[in-house]
Length: 137
Image (tube, rainbow, N blue to C red; front, side, top):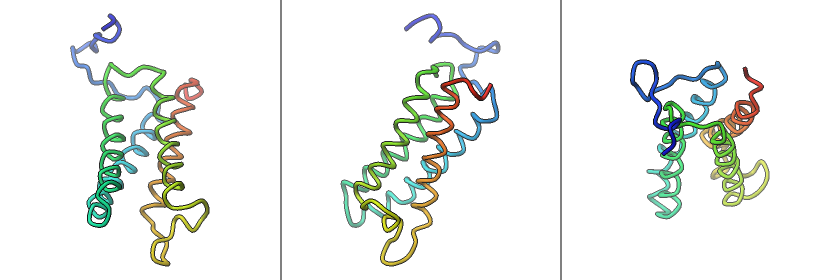
């Protein structure tokens, strides 16, 4: 572990808050999609065990990312990892559901949770790239 990774904040804590408001946007977007995946995961488990587990792991991944982001262990390069993770999740959704607007429909009705989760993931990807480039400062 390098010296910068073991640094603590002035009060000895490893907890840090985002330096810009857009960092909070990233947290909210990740939290929204993480919670949606956890909520849907238990429902999906009832009819497809593997997909349900993937939903739960994805939700935990987004929430775990928030946890790392709020520590001194976070590094600038991890913004690219967060953006890629969010984009891969969107691509996987269309891979399972099919490409197009029909992917957001379930049994003939619009699935609002799918819309919210994918919108949050796209916001997270965009915000993470902005944070990586430093354009938010």
